[in-house]
Image (cartoon, rainbow, N blue to C red; front, side):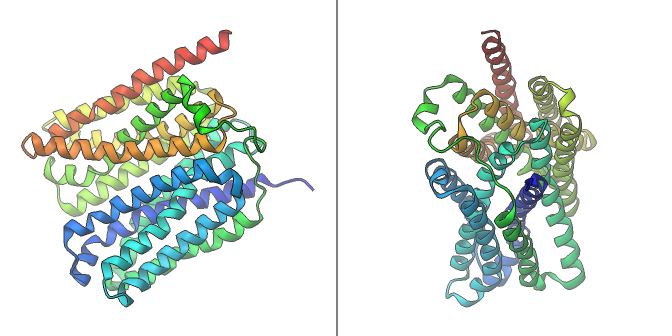
Length: 396
């Protein structure tokens, strides 16, 4: 009986939507947690930190143990964990003595699911016998963007219709997505990138120069994306003088839309394009967007820089995964896990550097964004070196 890998692809699409729910739902409730449970804003900020740190720990776990446990068991566990965390968010803060402990516990639970999805969906799709893997990978990652936009817009509409007090109901409704996807992952065909025992070990990967180049590209991809997206709302509000509501909708939401469009375009036409050249062009556009957003005094021009930065970073993360998989075909799960960890580290370092730089330079976010130019600049240099390395390898 012929295997239907389309079902595998749909399961992975829904996996990335699940990850978008995990990453974007709780931040919409930060002020609600603050008011309802009297949690200080300083503690509220720890929610995002705990989420990303948990994902980093899961990345390391995957590099060591996923191949032994098996892809299917781990990816099904990711959906169970995501659903349990979201449902727990509606229940535990209200029944535990300390609501903040309940919130953090649930964040850790669904962050475990999110981390497993981040590491496993890409190699699961890469192992399927699709033509034009680079295009398929780009389209796959676009579903995180559409999931992010969907969570922000549909949650906003739900709160407008039923009130913010109904957030616990919405948390349970969002949990239906991973609950449904448990069945998808339990029954769809799943292949392995490499046969048992044939994948490169972590120690072996560390000895290959092109691996470190891939790590640099991934870290810069994560930093370039999140340094702008995490600060987009505050930047639009403080530096460009627009309202808080407009800042939230126009900043992060349109950033995610343009990022998704970029991934869909490459997903549709990627077979006709040179991935490395396309990424170099995207890196140059990203650098221009950072310069435009940080140098201009025009709110319209600054906003344009923010929004089109989303388009420029769209291909960076999935593109780096595709290049790395081709350059290191026996890298296996360890390669994807370590690349995900590098992307997460970049995603943590990028916004941090922009924020700290802005504080040092007189609480000026424009100055912080100028420092952020270092990430797309390093990415461009790294891509030129990667292109030379791959060309040299093909010649021999």
